[in-house]
Image (cartoon, rainbow, N blue to C red):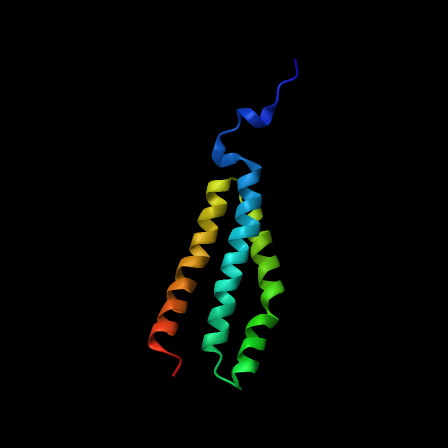
Length: 101
């Protein structure tokens, strides 16, 4: 019988968690940061603000993907997502509630 080493791994070391954290978590972080750039961009019209936020989308997502997937375990990968996502999401909510003045 051949032994499957992936079934012996604890859940938090499962490579699928790294891939999910990197793709979905990285995407959520990137969307949140894009909203932040769009809301906080001080120059130009609304169209230019949206363009400025969207311009860095792929570069930021690919950088976050690489940073998250380089984690040693799925638990650490999701921790990296939260470290980036929580502060940016709080700023997003504050800018949306207080308005863009």
